[in-house]
Image (tube, rainbow, N blue to C red; front, side, top):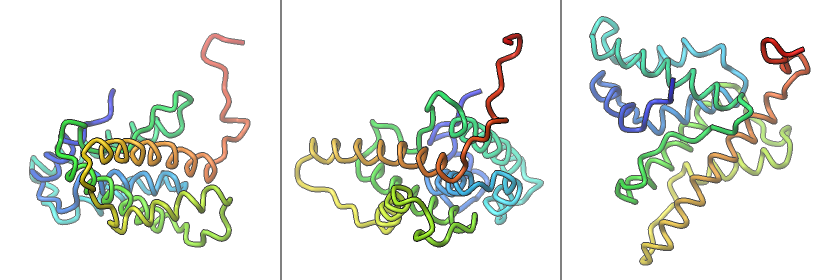
Length: 189
């Protein structure tokens, strides 16, 4: 199975009359997972879809897609392949829309981290606290496009990569792997 695309997620949310957008939605689930709250999946699904009719076919389809989004994101974060990526618009979308989504993703991440009850940055490892401060700054929407389109594209690419690597770092630091998590593949002894 593969992670749903930004557009698939956005379309499913709109059809289900969910007000949150795909980037913020994914950011919040990444914040929860990074904060060690994988057990809150059903609560996250219910909260995300709280304004939609649970019997509506579009809401049922959206719930399935969001369930898949959660599962695939969780697998990417805990996997050894470094496959995690924030759910953002495609690179051929308008840069202003991509920057807005990046901001919303960070805002959602910080919201999810708050739901995970990770409140005090002072008690976190310094590199994690720094990443979270950066995410909070980005989430405030202080990003502005300049006059050089090429420079803006490069800055966007660097920020999206920072989100990818920073999220993985936060997740790994707040969810250390225990020795029992290292299992030999089936048939290998």
